[in-house]
Image (tube, rainbow, N blue to C red; front, side, top):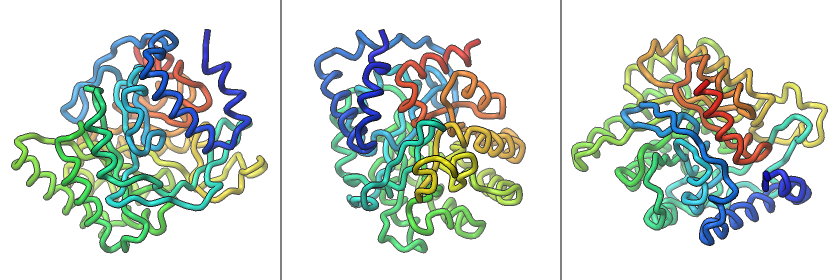
Length: 339
């Protein structure tokens, strides 16, 4: 029996954000009652060493589903090799006005303009303290909306200071399309200065804590060949621990004709599979094996995960695929990679 197949039609009749909140609350309660294990498939082990960490399998949950780290233990029962929560910002913020989340079922896609809505890093830290999960856990970092772009590094450094040693890795998100001017941080001088500040702080914190915590960077799919080469130079120069490719796209190619296809925000899901894979392949060449890639974008089937690995990714992660396919997708992807 696939409980998600039964629940999905009911959830899809609700407003997407309402359905999301109900699902997260339901997962927390089901976990507390010990019900999840009975319904979730057992995922085989497929260990992989990346960023100096040993992942039980290469398939992870992308950031965005659990913004405040409230359901870590429940999500861990899905069998993910790693979980990424957030994005979190230094201070709480409400995000963009509702509605801000839209389904495009005919394309197995979602458009969101959430805007880093979260309860702030101190709330996240309290949830991390309560979580029993001992696996690989990452936190996605964002800047507050009202922090000027020229002071963005200050927000990332605050988050790095507070989270250092509390999780397995952190991801510097410079690619969300829903925070004004954030993608400007992907530019040459801006990116160079940001990475310099972050890596210097990472080194100081490693000395202080006696422990090295990797820092990944999440990039956009909407990059041209020149931008990819320039960014790769800087990722290699600063010895970034991993690159997550990619975030959501501003493109509407293939969904323009669909209901909600013209909504503002980032598009995720099946329509961006090829776009993100092309970016992974280009970065794989440009990084020359010096920085590992984590592939994300349009993974809705096992063969999609295999395609990302074939393009050069070491690990994969998804979020939209979970909404359309449910927890069974985790096992399907791990088995596809094992095969």
